[in-house]
Image 1 (tube, rainbow, N blue to C red):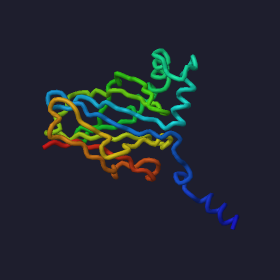
Image 2: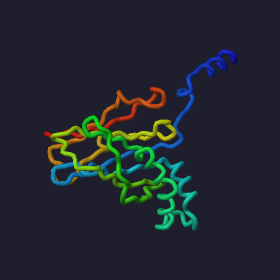
Image 3: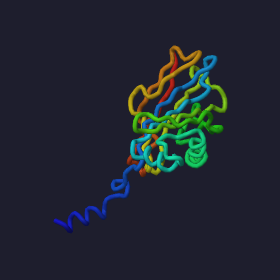
Image 4: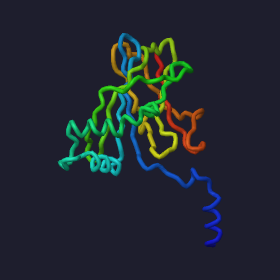
Length: 192
């Protein structure tokens, strides 16, 4: 029996053996102005273990919270590295991928025993979702970080012209990651 289990373990594909090391609940506020989408305001709520690790690494004065200078260090040393991966937020206007300008309004917020990044991703141009398709997904392709919209209402809409529009979250079956083992969710904005 032991040989069988050893052989089975050795032939399993690598994705079946791996798992994420960081869990992130993703929330997004789709911001409208003059009837057009102008930005996404993102919230990434980290799991308690990773939150404790961030706090341990960046709370230099050990007061169990992140002071403004410590938040700036965290942004510079940890968050800014996500820019190379589009801040793990992949949007499309029609079929065209969005190339984000720099993220703005970065903050770290404590929520009970977790930390949350909050930041804004301004679109390169306003998008009228009544005339152009707009959707986005969040993922980290190696699945070291598991990013997920935790509920069907994790994406909300706000601002002038958002009435009559809605966000639908569904599996992005055309965009699997981690060797096809994981299917991220995509939020699609539609308007009447």
